[in-house]
Structures are given as C-alpha cells and as structure tokens.
Length: 445
Image (cartoon, rainbow, N blue to C red):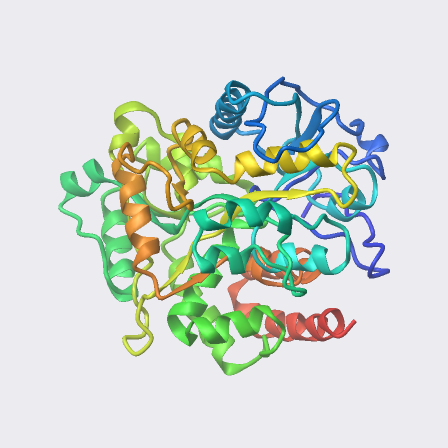
C-alpha cells in the first residue's frame, strides 16, 4: 500500500489497524515522534459549551478531529462557535489529516489521547470499548437519549450494555451523477446491475469514463464489495461475513467477485493511483458519468455544480434479495478512557449530542443528514432530502466494511486483497482463499 505499517501490540506480527477518512487518526504520544507530530498538535480554537452537564470542568477540553478536509473542518468551527454562545469551557481542536496516521489508532488510545475525539458507531466502537481503551459515556446518554432512536442507541452501545459513542450524523453510499450529463445524453438511472453495465457501455461511446473509481487510500473499494455482497447474498450473510462467521472462499463470495469483474469493465482504470477526491473531480468536470461513494462526495462540488449532483441507489442484482439494505455509516464522538478534563469532556459530549449541535454542523457540511429526532431538516438541500429518504426507507443498514469487520482484518487483509483483485481480477479465487486463511487466524486470536 506504500504506507509504513506499525505493529499492533495486541496481535504481534500484524500491523496496527488501518483506518479511513471517517476514522480518527489522532496525534497520540506513542510512536508519533518519528512522524513529525506531537501529541495535541494542530490548530486550536476556543469555544464553550452549554453548561448542560453541570460538571466542574477546569481548563480546556482537547478535541481530536479527523476533519482535515475543508468543508467538515469549517463545519466543526461553526459547531464550536455555537457551543461557545451556549456558555461553557474552552476547547482546543487538534486536527490531523485523515490518512496520515491510518495505522496509529492503537498507539493513540494507549498513549495520551485527546479528551474527546471523532469516531464512529458499530463494531469498531465496540472493539475498543471491549479492550477498555475508551470512556463510558452512559451518564451522558441518560441526558441525551431521548433525542435518538433505539437503533441509534444500539449502534452506540458496547457489548457490556454501556454507551461509548455520541452520534452526530450519518450518510448513505449511493451512485452519484450529474443531472445535466444524464439529461444531455438521454441517460436514465438504472435499477438493475445489468442496466448499469449497459449504461456504462453507452457512456463509453459518448467519451465518458462510465464509473469513476479510486482506491489509492485502500478503503473506497470496500463500498463496492459491501453493496455487491448485500445485493447478491443479503444483509444477514454480509454481516456474518464481516463478523468472521462465514467463509471468504465460499461460492457465495466467489459470485461477488465474479460480479465485481463486470463493474471493473466500466470503471476508471488506474484506480490505485487515484484518491477519492480526484475521482470526484472527474464527475464534477463531466469526464465521468457515475461514482459510487458516500454523499460526502458533495464536498468536491460547489454552487450550481452541487445543485446538479444527485444519486440513485445501488441497483438490484438479484430480485429475490432486492435493494432494501443501505450502507449508511454513523459518525460521531468518543471519549478517552481517562480524560484530563472529564467534566468538560462530558459537558462537550452532551452538547454534541444535541439538536443544536447537529443543526450547526449540517448548516455548513450539507453532505450528511442528522440523526437527532429534533434536528431541523427544513433547510435540507435536495441531496440531503434524497439521502434522508434513502436511509429512512432502508430495512437494513450496514456501517461499512472497515466498521463492521475486525479492525486488523479490515486493514491488513481486506485492503491489500481488494487492491490485488483490482490489479488482477483473474486471481479472485486465490485472493479469497488467502483472505479466509488470514481471517481464521485473526478472528480466533
């Protein structure tokens, strides 16, 4: 992958977990000095809380942020501005590039993590909660719980029944395109994979790259696998595969790889040398016709171009399975196991778990949708309305492979395996066999 992999202290011989754009890559003290970053480095801003938790917070709360892209970075600035007007303690924001420390999370959590940091719901939250590396925020949930559905609370809950996560928003993965490109060429959004492949061939004749594709950072291809697996084998099989309960070298997974080969035929070549932002720009520039990604793709569009952006759900592959499963990761926050400013950290988390915080954030980052029941959706743009409808109509929601699977498996097995498959699809069988062998070692350790 072209990245230096540190050893996972919990599993000798295996690199530490690699994380993607949605995962916190904090500047912990352990093993970071050689990379030129110090703990609690980065930019800082002063902001205040609503004083809602009533704790005796002293000193600033440190906040570790992976929001290095310009849009979410500004959204957090707006959120903390709202936090300040509510009256509370200061917050020092430490922003780190999304991919710089992809393998550093174990080191970060076992070093000197910030009081509060960006994270996400699901398996990965439970994984570190089970290891005792993050803080219990159940008392915060006693105050904010009425604002969320039972499903959101479940996604924020560890195996011990305690809450370790405070949600901020979620976003669906779908196939994005520009309305003007479809209208100018007479294209129609496909509802089946066969229609999508046919549409791709039509786009080629028009001089377009049919399906924008990028996997330089390793994680984007996971979204393609997830959707194909859920569309072919169903949501339950997919989740069980992620949990290590199904075999990667099974005929069912072989069918997924075989079907993926059809999409590769209409995908942009040289994807391993392209970032998701670069792929998004080819859609913005009307050089590519479609792009499977989360709605955060909208960060690469502005003004009229963003108004021109829309999407269709990942199409049906098997009519007996349907399309009622949607990939919609939940992003939010966690707390250090022993925060330097515990009262301030919980005070901050209570604010971040409010409708006001979500409204403040989404007013700037209009690529995501709120999860709080009382959040203001009246100002949603067309893409947000579409995203909210897609999620609300879903029967099942997945969190993304690198959130639903074991961290080490996702980083050290899935990423290189998918990249090997993209390089040489003919090796799918041997790749799957190797994935299964490594899975057995990782999940049984």
